[in-house]
Length: 211
Length: 234
Image (tube, rainbow over all chains, first blue to last red; front, side):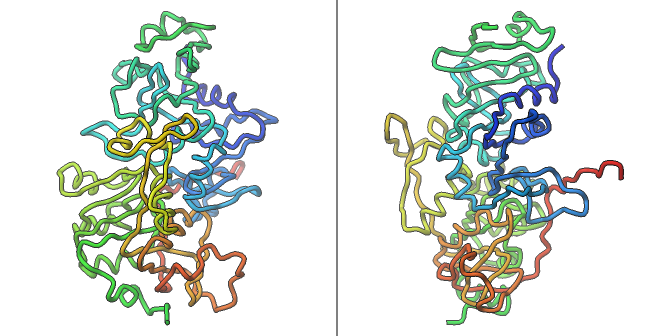
């Protein structure tokens, strides 16, 4: 059975290592915080200007001056620090953040990522995504393997405007886990009950099964 | 020279002109200069180029200046929360320049620090890099981005004193400190006006040299996405 959103988040959480500073994107990546493995201490960064992001507040703790990059109200921890957006992206661009986990619309077999724009349709903007994929040490994408219409999202070349070129290191979909390096894209793990044939049917990108 | 003014209208007196460029601090609705935005709307100043990470929501923040069509062009990183913005942009009434968020922050910082340009990896290989100078450093490709300076910067702080020294609170700091440095004139609105000498000089985020005018405002501090958790066993 393919993975659901929580399974994908749980799998992504296995990429966390003790002591990591991590930036989580909006959507499934946010759920990763629920599955941080025991004994692994990570500090979550919010690119609007915070290290040490805590859980959502209780009703009587809500503070309009304390939000995450998705504009949701959150809380601070004992380790928390605040800083400007310039300092925040200094951390990101400067390679001080260990891991970025984010969603995607398309990923190419060379690690190109598209997740910010559909020409003529969606004009929301890239926010911090271009800075994150360019600057963070390791980029993990979590997304559904195919679009809602069933079109593949793992492609030879992205059709949408890119967020970054050759930036993705790992992709976790509902069907399995892929890695990308100089030698190309490899399928390294399958969700329970999913076969390489199932993956092939929903994938345009060239990959090597390396299970 | 007296920096402290009675209200937002007085603080903007003589600095506004049609076609000007304005930087506005804030991330989403967090840490936005609410009082100064209202005064800009009421002034009727138009054909504005506004540099701000976001564009407010339809009926609050910079969304108010979109409703009145006072904005000609926005320079932003994310505008997903504003339907009127999307409508004006798709119909060609509004110009839009998307900047990656970190590039936008650094452009403001650089502008205020007298740095006309800098190289960054962000956006290499994307449409953001189109037409920009590319240069290799240590085998990696970077693009040239320019510093930004505005005719007017409007920022919001938690506490400030009559010298214009400012302290921000939690994530309401965001773009405010850089934008304060990059305005030819910077006007700050604060929640609390602190008596001179009562702010710890070691804890000032924005030194008063960057702030020409200051007001104490009243702040609604609207929350865009109130997200809470339930108490267990409550």
